[in-house]
Each structure stands twice: as structure tokens, then as C-alpha cells.
Length: 432
Image 1 (cartoon, helix red, strand yellow):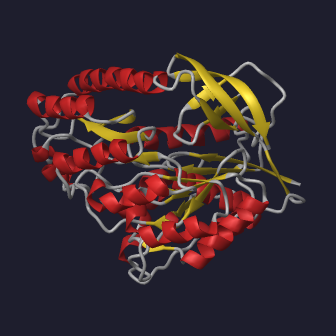
Image 2 (cartoon, helix red, strand yellow):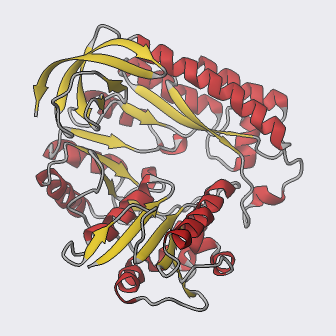
């Protein structure tokens, strides 16, 4: 039996891709082992959204060679797609397989690949492949997860000046609605009670196949295959008020929105080539709070975009502070090659970026804690993920001391306290 170790870096789309790989490996022939163990094959499914993501991938290559100098090392994913020449120079790499070849070549390499004196590269220009359709097999099991991710869209047709992902993922392409429903049914039959719809730019879903994201959600709501369907990040430019109304009345879609602001300053947003202004974002978040008072509202905030002044940063800070956001991720700007922002004037000093990021993260901690505290004394269904931890439909992580529950159980929990940005609860009943 061949041993294999796979590590996934980055987004939920990558995590789905890795799950596809594991689902297609026969259990009778392959044994999955931890990355620190000796394995016959190491697969690193990479991210490249920041320079730190690139560095993390290189670190895993080194870890693989330390664990087994004779093991086969395969690097795939977004870093492999856009920086294959760079990866070829990293000692210990045997194969570099871009997203363009992830599903056509990777499994064959895992089965038949040999150690290489010089890395073999499987790459094509994925963004220029205009006729390339949605390519991603289905899965029955999402290894190591209580909730299952389901990739319904891939790629992006837009060109934000800081983002390299379109070069790594190609043009937007979508999976047909009937196939999505079939895949959801298969996951439900495997016992998953929550499915997370994911994609690179999920709001673009369906435009290439004559439908749209709203229609997909309508059909999912009609079918009611699982009780919980969660959405990943939405673009404010493509999020309409009628979508909020639909989710407010839904019995299936979780009351959680993640709407990527990036900056609260109009000038910075224009330089980023984002397709909305701060007012649009505020309209959306205010509407969500009006229609769905308990909803979690998250966002992504970029700090230190080239040319960002202290005044422009403070515009972001104030909008975030006054908005209905309940949590957000802070990303220090990371220069990416082949992007317009990488050659812009007035690159921001790293120490200044670090200071601004700290200020925003402190604000984020307070907003998250304040949001959680308003639910003390209320009871929510919590989907168990780790023995005595789980998540409410509106994305509140809850822990409790009671044992005896299984991963995947749905437990009704009364929230009694908030400690270290996490709710503490008392189980009431169990509905498995």
C-alpha cells in the first residue's frame, strides 16, 4: 500500500480540489498519513494570494524532504500555476502541476510518478483558454470536515489591480444547476448536514451557462436537500438587495454574509479597480441588519494598498467601525508580480502597514465580542465539529463542557458567556 500525505493551503476552493484528489484514491491502495510522517508521495496544493502563502508552500516542500528524502514531491495549485519557473528551482520538487492540469494529470502522477533529477512541469495559460469549461469531479466524502464544501464556480473575469488569482484560476466558469443538486444529494446521503457553496467569484455563477446565482439559490431552496447551506464571499458590486430579501425568507440559506469591502475609501477602491463605492457596501450591510437582525456579517479588509494615506486608512477604519460588520479578516497588502499594483508609486512602509493592521484587528475583536454577547441567554442549534465545539447557523463558534455528542450532531445550546472571542454554552437537547 502506498502512503500519501496531502496539505492544502489557502481557500475553500483549494480545499475542495484536495478533497476531489483524496476521493479518487482507492483506500485499498493508498493510506493517508500526516505531513510530518514518512510518506511515499507528498502533494502540496498551494495558494499564492500573498508572498507569505508562497513562503509557506516552500516550507512544506522542505518539510517533505526532511520527512522522507526519497519521497515523491508534487506541487500543484495556484502558486504552481503562476510561478512554475520559481518552483523548478526549489530543491526537492519532482513535479509542478498547475491548476490547468490539476485534474487531468495529478492523479496519474500520484499513481505512476517517479523521482526526477529536474522537475517536470505541467502548465498551460489557463486564462487564455476561453473555451475551458468547469472541471472538477464530484465527491462523496469531505475528509476531516463536519460541513462539506461544494465548488460550484471557478475563475474570475475581473482584474483588481492587486489580485493575481485570475491568472491562477482562469476565466469564470460554472457547474450546471442539475449537477449541483445531484452532488448535494450525494453529500447529504453521506451524512453532511451543512454544505458550503464555494467559488473564486461566486457572484459570477451562471453567467457563462445562461443562468445566475440567484436562480441557483432558488432551486436549492425549493429542493431542501440539507437544512443548512452556507455561502462564501460575495462581491458588493454583484450583491443586490433582492438577494438579501430572499435569504431573509429562506429556510435553508444560513444567515451569514461575507461581503468583501477591501477598503472604505472611494479613491483607494478606484485604484484597486473595484466596481463599487463605500456607500454601496453600507447600503448592503444596513439592509442585511434590517431584514435579518441576527445575521453575521463579515468582510475582507486590505491594509497598505500602494498610495493609501493615513486619512484614507481612517476612512476605512470609520466605515468599518460604524458599519454592521460583526467580524472581518485584515490582510496586509502583498505585492504580487504581474499585477498593476506591484509597480504603483508610493508603496507603503511595512511598519506602517503592521501598525494599521493592528488597529483594525483590535477593532475587529471588539465588534465580534459585542456581537456574540447580545445572544447570551438565547438558544441556537449548534452543529458539532469537535466533540464539544460547534457553530450556529449565524456563524457563532460555541464551546461547552458536556461530553457524549458526536461530530455531526445538531445540539440545541443556550449561550451563557463569551470568552476570548468564543461563545460558551449549555446544551439543552440533541437532535441527530
